[in-house]
Length: 67
Image (cartoon, rainbow, N blue to C red; front, side, top):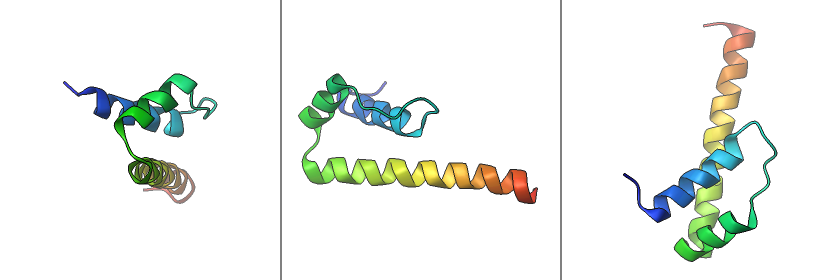
């Protein structure tokens, strides 16, 4: 359904937003670098980080402040 480039980006998002240790495996780093240039990698990092922040802040707000 997704090409290799998209799968690499989704794997990055999974690592960055998951509950486990946020360490990028060397294989994922190599895969990302084979598909994206530096500026694209920076954008992916920022988008994944922003989405993660929004989700976690929203979850905390819902728990603390209610619906």
